[in-house]
Amino acid sequence: MKRAYNFNAGPSALPLPVLQRAQEELLNFQNTGMSVMELSHRSKEYDAVHNKAKQLLRKLMNIPDTHDVLFLQGGASLQFSMVPMNLLPREKVGNYVLTGVWSEKALKEAKKVGQTHIAASSKEANYTYIPSLDQIQLSERAAYLHITSNNTIFGTQWHEFPNLPVDLIADMSSDILSREVNIEQFALIYAGAQKNLGPSGVTVVIVRNDLLEHVPENLPTMLDYRTYSSSNSLYNTPPTFAIYMLSLVLEWVEEQGGVKMIEKRNKEKASVVYEAIDASAGFYSPHAEKGSRSFMNVTFTLPNEEITKKFLAEAKEQGFVGLAGHRSVGGCRASIYNAVPYEACEALAEFMKQFQKRFA
View 1 (cartoon, rainbow, N blue to C red):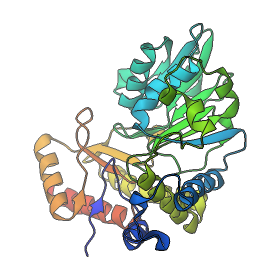
View 2: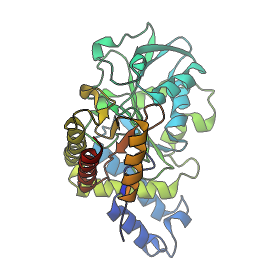
View 3: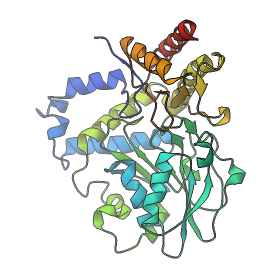
């Protein structure tokens, strides 16, 4: 079976061994005579899957005992509301760094809950760069500083995180598990699974335990982080199949040599595509400034709309999927998440070089 070169921005590529394992176990999981999708979330068989996913995530990301791991639903978009609802007291101010569409949406939801402040922004340059750390200006009475660690649409990524006297919160939906990070630096991390963790359906939240002591008492039960922390994320029926797939992806990451090796490969993959761009004498023009380039999403434009359409059409014929750029940037975008193999990036770079020879 021929597999596509999958560069979709999300839901994105999954490791082939993970898909094959899920296929093998789909109808009869561990001799239960049932699929994982059919198991009770109160059963010992599912309980083992659930806890294994948490334990593997802790191990791979070096999550200390000071932080809890929660499994929620609603994607990162629900976290745009849950973060301020749980962590933004009336007398304090939520600080946000704007680096793209998703940070704008996070700010929009926070404004509905309480006071907000834009601590830094690169919007004036159409989000071509990540603001430098010395550009960040906190407000008085700052409750937290919220960042989006990687920006899928604009192809930018934080390569150094702010170290300021305020709780740091990060939407890591598109680069969690792609590189080593110091969890102790963050008060809260959240991530939709559909880039590097598994299929869509489960959202991972890593929260420092002491934050839960200050959550308001009047929150709706399902919007309160304490509900999930106190019940091992089993207060209601969790997305069991998505969590099962998450556990398989985490096993695969461990087999690859852990996050350190994954990070090394991701940098190698990105280098191959960026080298094709940089060597094109301007035929391919990168959106992101060099110091802010993402290792997850490579964004670039071609000389004009006609050539771009030709590029995308020929790429599709060659088996490349998901290369069209977002409308706010245009051009092309190659999303090279953990499960995208080096060979796919190599093939894309070669296709880009050959296309340039014919149309430059």
